[in-house]
Length: 282
Image 1: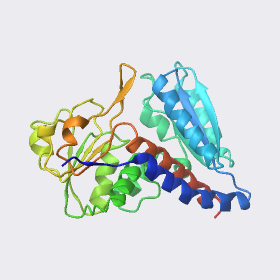
Image 2: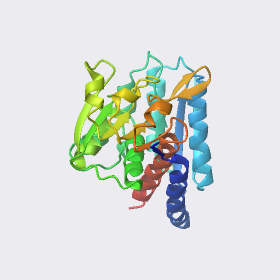
Image 3: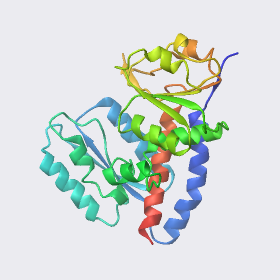
């Protein structure tokens, strides 16, 4: 039996409906949630992702401001801009598109963002709170994955969950999120020896390795839940980390590379922005 395909776009609409009343309440108090988006260089995929965030904010009555910076911007200038935005009380969320050009120290730059405006959840303070089981802001893709699992009624407690990928954006925080829900978690990556042996034991398989077609049908347990986070541009098309056509014949639930986790990630970014805007009035 073919897997049920999880519709990330439909689920995102549910999130936006929930957010609508919260934004209306904020606006009635004179607070318009505002996101500052910092894009470095001229990357087509970044442009698309930034446009999705701008459109989502606009559709909810939120505001966005885009800073499109040269690829060769100096780190000091970038940090200066972030500090200006930290001090601007009208800005409730700051996002710097990653990956950044190699001459920039990504960790140093991200840690300059005010933790209370870090709606990507990447600042060391927010990462530390997540690790301690008391998160303030959860990175938007892991938050999206949790919402997806909740939407299909999956209780992760005691389930063997395998995360393929160890990035600070997805792999590491989703592993901690799942541990906080009492899942049994294995974290792998493209250098893991005997990867198929590990993934075949997963009740829930989350793949965020950035390696198109990495996961084949023979690497997946029968009736596993498969969440494909991968989005790599190949010949102008976005490809996932999971070989969808074959894996969908074994899984019970699966997401597609397009229309799956991506729309939910943007929706959860907006949820994080609303959270930060609400916190600003306390």
